[in-house]
Image 1 (cartoon, rainbow, N blue to C red):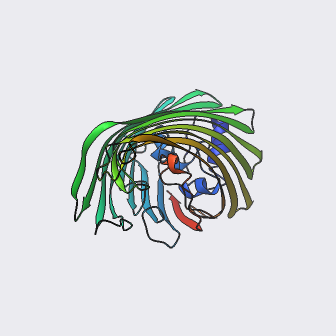
Image 2: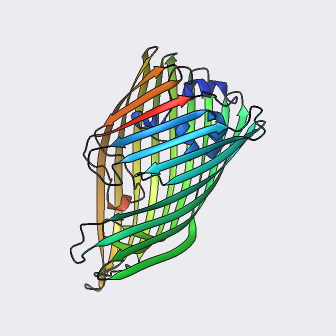
Image 3: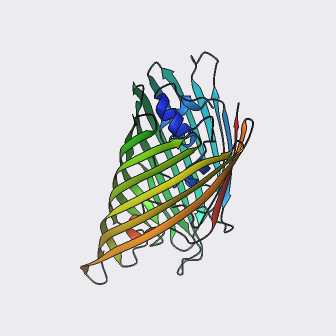
Length: 384
């Protein structure tokens, strides 16, 4: 795999290009988060795209229960458009039954010590909510388009900076046989930005601080209430990761993340008595991961994530005519086990974990969304 020429120490520690494959399944195996350098970064840190030209990925995941949060299918191709790099690197990513979207297109290019990338994301999905008790059939439709820009800047032989910015046009619709169509229209108030720094501390350790902000300002279908609401969500996340390479075949990764959420809901379309909900809360997440290449063709991995959540919600109910308040404290522990088989230019990654990955981490005010179900994912990677 081609790695960025910047920060050679970081590349050896984090990409592990010559000793281990790098895929979204690998990230799940090691507990997730932004403290790893991986090909999965190209969907979030767009400036990393030119580092992964000549990669094809095929993914399949699920728990055996069919719904869009549990099933994942995806394929990707990242290609250097010419040998000299003048035309940059292009990427195509397609998804089916996958909460990460429908289609993504990306392009990036090296400009000396700076790598730039751009990204277009189409998230078009629809599903039925069969748990409504007062309606015959309800269909929820999502139609979002996101434009993203990102960059990676070399800061010296042992450091680089990643930055990314997104703007989203969101559209939500629910259709029901008895209540008609509730259309949120096309809204342009949603955006996000994020920064992270990889800083080598000697030859074996890398420090990774990060910060991110996200705002969703559009109509949103809230599964907990089975209704379409006007939503104003603000998320601020700060994190600190550490990667250590005790020897050439082993990597240890750890990170601590703090997230503060404020989530205001109003104007429910079905209006069943609850008019307004104002909430806030804090999430603390500790991740630990281990990756070890036991023989030249086999890499073993394990990861654990311990999460703590504390939130408070205030509700205004028409039927009661007053405010009510409630608190929500929750904990969750997720464990992942994985392996990778290496055969020439092909890597086969597998992860099995004791929970379905959190799909809607923005829906924190209603608790940590870990489903107790064995979930697995398989990724085939070909480097050309």
